[in-house]
Amino acid sequence: MSDALARSPRTPVHTRRITCAGFSREDGLFEIEGLLIDTKPIALQLVTGTVPAGTPIHQMRVVIVIDRERTILQVRASTEHSPYPVCGEIAPAYAQLVGLRIEPGFTREVKRLFRSERGCSHMTELLPPMASTAFQMLWAGGGFEGADPPGSERRTSPLGGCHALKLEGVIVRTYFPQLKGSPS
Image 1 (tube, helix red, strand yellow):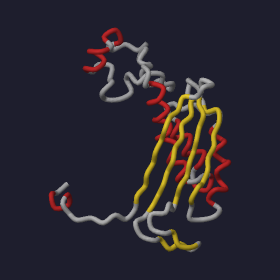
Image 2: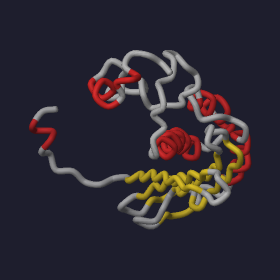
Image 3: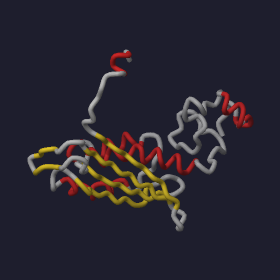
C-alpha cells in the first residue's frame, strides 16, 4: 500500500462487530454464542423508517450447543434489530444445523443450507467464526494428542492444521517430537 493511502484522512461510514464466546456448561456440553451488530455513525433512512446514528441496523444472535465431538445438539437464532420487520421470521430455519458436526466442510454445508432466500446473510455469516470458536475452545486445554491423517475429514487435533503447527515445522519438532512427521 502506498504511503499516500496509508496517511489519507478517513471518515467512519459503517461498523460491523462480530463477537463469538464459548462456554463450558455444567452438564458437560458446550455453548457458543455469536453476535453480529452493524451500526452507522449517521442516521440511516430506510423504506421502513429511520435508524438513528449508533443504533444497530442489524443485531443477530445465534447460540449453538455442542458436545465434545462438535456435534450440534441445539440452536437458538434471534433477530434483535433489523431493517425490516420480517427479518426474524427466518430464525427457526437454523434448527437445520442440529445433528451437523463442526468439521472440515461445515462452512460449505452452511452456505448450501442457507443460501439466498433460505437464510439470513447475517446469521449465516456468524456460523464460520462460531465454528472456529468451537475448535479454539475445545483445544484450549490441550487436544494435542496426535495429528490427524492428511486430508482427514475429522479434525481432532490442531496439529497439521496451519502453518505454525505443520507436522514438519519447528513447533512440532520442538514441543511434540514424538509426533514429528507422523499422523496419530
